[in-house]
Length: 623
Image 1 (cartoon, one colour):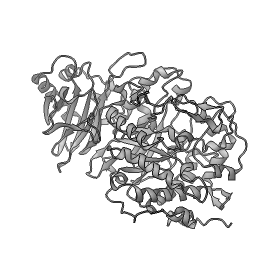
Image 2 (tube, rainbow, N blue to C red; image 1 turned 135 degrees about the vertical axis):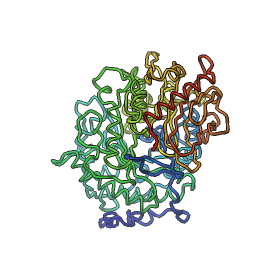
Image 3 (cartoon, rainbow, N blue to C red; image 1 turned 90 degrees about the vertical axis):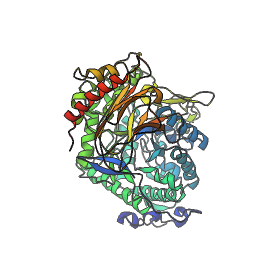
Image 4 (cartoon, rainbow, N blue to C red; image 1 turned 60 degrees about the vertical axis):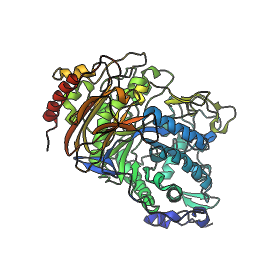
C-alpha cells in the first residue's frame, strides 16, 4: 500500500482525519460536535507570574493524585481501573479522605490504537466512564498519554524490566535490537543505556517511516493521528460538564531523547520536543480543545540531579496555551544520599520550577512527585513528601516564612504519584510471562508508590499519615494569592513530630494560638465582584472546632453562613471547605485546628487579629 497521507498533520490542518483511513477515525454513532464552551481553567497573569484561573477569574490550585500506574498493566486493560465501580469508589475515597480537587488520568497509546488502521473506541468508552466517575465528584482532570521506556513490547519475556506506551505493531515495524540495560540499579537507566529503548525513542522524535500491515506511516504522525481521533471522540462523547472539567492534556509523559545527535539537551528540546508539542497543540485545536491547555514536559532528567540539560529554558515564551509541566523526584535520596529531609529541603527545587515557568511566561504544574512506600529508605518517605508539599506551598524554609512571606513565591499545583486501589493485590504477567507474575506494590518494575490500598472489605485506606495527604490548601482565590503556608505537623517515619512553620517572637499572640496545632495562613488581594475564596479543610479541621482569625471576622466554630463559613466539598458529605467572602483589598486568614488544647477565647482571637493586621500592613502594603 502507498504511504498513508499525513499532509494534514505536517501542515497542522484537519488533524482529526490524520489517520487517512476514514473508517478508522470516524466516530461511530457520535452526536454532532459541541462548541468547546467556557473553559474551566486557563493560564492567566498574576503580577509577574502566570497562574491557573477558573471561569470566575479565581486563582486555582490543583491538588490531587495520579490515577494511576495501573494504566501500565495489561491486567487493568491499560486503564487506571478494572471497571467503573472501582473508579467511582476510588474517586469517592479520594474526595472524602484528602479533599483533592484534581487527578492526572493516565491513558495509553497502545490502548487507543491496537492496530495501525484501528482506534479502539470501546477502550475510550471505558475511559470516559472512569473519567466521569471523577468529574461527577467535583474533580478537574488532566489527561496524560503515559509512556515509560517507550513500550512494554521492546522487552523480552525474561527481562528484569518492562515499559508501557507504544503498541506492539509500532515495535514490530521498528525491528529493534535485543534489549539490555546492562548494569542498572533503577529501571529509568534504560533510557540512557538500553539500545533498543533509545533507538525507538530516537525514531519517534525523528518521525521515522515504518512499514506496517496497513502501509507506510511516520511513527510520530501515527501518534498524533490517534491523539486527534481520541480528543475528537472524548469531546463528542463526554457529558458537557465532564468535558468542561478536563483542564487539558499532557501529550507525552517523561520525554527522553534517545540520542542528541551532537546537540545539547537544550538544543534538542528546541529542535525536536517543542515542535512535537506545537503539533499536538494544533491537534487539540482541530479536535475542539482550543480553550484547553497543553501541559508540556521538559526532558525527564532536567531536575533530578543527573545533570541533564533541559527544562525548555531555551524554548522561548510558551504562552498561555502551554503550561510548564514537570515532575520532581529526589534522585539523590532515591539512590545514594542517606540523609533525611526536613524544613526547607526542597525549596531550591520547587523555586527552580517557579522561576522556569515565569521565564517561559506560563503557569507551572508538578504532575508527579513522591517517594517509595516500602523497602530501604522508605522510613524517610513521610518527611520527604512533607517537605515536597511544603516547598510547593511556599519557597522558603518554614522558620523564615513569617518574615519572608511576600517573597515566598506562588503556590504550586501538583498531583502526587500515585493512587492505586489495587496496591499489593496485582496479578500482572510481566512482559506476558506466566512465570513472572507481579503481585506486590504497584505490580510494575518493583515500584511501590501508591499512597492507598484496599482492604478485604473493599474499603480504600491511606498508607501515609492523613496529615501528609489531607492538607489545607487554597483551592480557589478571588483575586490573587499573595502568600500561603501550612503547618501539617505530620510525623516522620519514626513517629517524631516537629513544627517547621515556626512563628517569630514578634507575634506572641499568634504563636500562643498555634502552638502544637495544625494551622495555615492565606494572604490575598481580593477583587470586587462577589466571588468567594475557598480553602479545603482537612478532616482534622472539623468546622465546629476550627478557629479563624481574619480581617473578615474572628471566630471559633465556623458557621454555615456569613463572610466566613464552612460548606461541603463538591461530591462529598464528609469533606469540608472554608468559604470567605471579601471586598476588594488585601486580606488575611489564619485557620487553626483547635480541637485539642485549651479553649480559645475571644480575647486571644482579637489579640492575634491585631498582630496579623500589623504584619499584613508591613509585608503586604495595599496598592
